[in-house]
Structures are given as C-alpha cells and as structure tokens.
Image 1 (cartoon, one colour):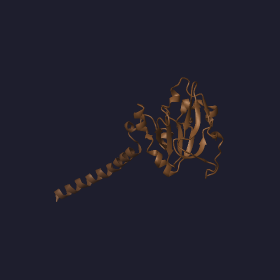
Image 2 (spheres, rainbow, N blue to C red):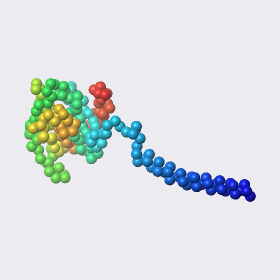
Image 3 (cartoon, one colour):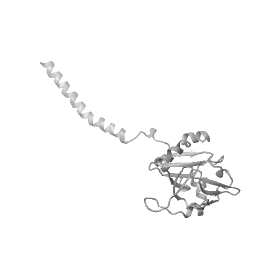
Image 4 (cartoon, rainbow, N blue to C red):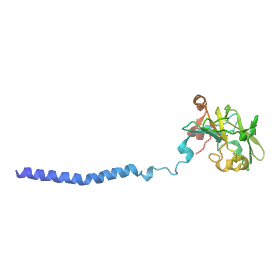
Length: 203
C-alpha cells in the first residue's frame, strides 16, 4: 500500500513537472519558427528584382558582347535591359546617350492605354528597341523576346547615366508582354543567373 502511494505521488510529481515545462518548450519552439537563426540569414537582403522577378540572360545576342537581361515577373511581364557584361560598359566613359528613334518610328513616342494595352505594337525578338552610344561607338539594343512593347524607359533620353549606375533597376530599357507560347519558345534559348555567371566568370 505504501509502495502504491509512493508510486502515485512520484507519478503526480512527474506530471506536474511535465505540465510546468511544457508551455516553456512550446514557447521555445515558437521562437525558433518565428525568429530564424542569424547564421541562416543571407549576408545581404535580396533586391526587389531578386524577390519579384526571375532573371534570364541573352549573352552575345545577335552580336558578340551584346549581353542583355530579361527579368520575368510572375504575371508574365518581361523587363529588358543591358547585362553588366555588355560591351558598351567596357568603354571608357560608359554610355553617354540613348536614342529610341530606331526602325520605322520612335519607340519613345508610343503610347499604350488602358488595361487592354491598346496601341501596343508587336515586336520580334530581334527588333530594335534603341541605340546606346558611347564616346566612340553605338550599339543596338534588341527585344530578346517576341511580344507587345508596353513601354520604354524614356528617362534614359535625358539621363543616360542611369545605365552606367543602375542598369538593372532605374536604367532598364523596356517592358514587353510576350504571349505564353512565345515565352516558352524563347525561354530555352536564355541562360539562368548561375549559367550566365559561369559563362562570364562572374563571382
């Protein structure tokens, strides 16, 4: 009988101990979920481009050294611009002027309106978007993807230096909306970020 009482008392104490510690353990588990280990965090936070877009690259597009990027948003929109290894950036002084008056009409004068993007012109992947000029040369920037041209970055006309300082953000060239089928066709010809870095030996 005494042994039974002792066992019951020990069992009761054990249950009380577990009952007391359990909330603390739950709180600790919750902290682990909500507060990540600092050692698991990246050294630098991801940029808006990294968070919202998938990066693709078209190296040597139409000509050697004409490296361009295609940042694709989840909604299908593609932002087109010059990759950091584009030959224009290798010249002293960088890019000094941007001219959208290429082809049959000036791209900067195109006006697209409404949700249905009325007046949007359909361009081929090799269609010219603009000409970027350096001190000694000029280079044609192309669409890279077939689709409707929704806008060009006309800020570059008066601020071409944005290409030298921020080509992947404020210095983008244009925004294009390809049809899903056209995107699938061109996607296989583009490189992902890691493939591009490996090709151009970027660390």
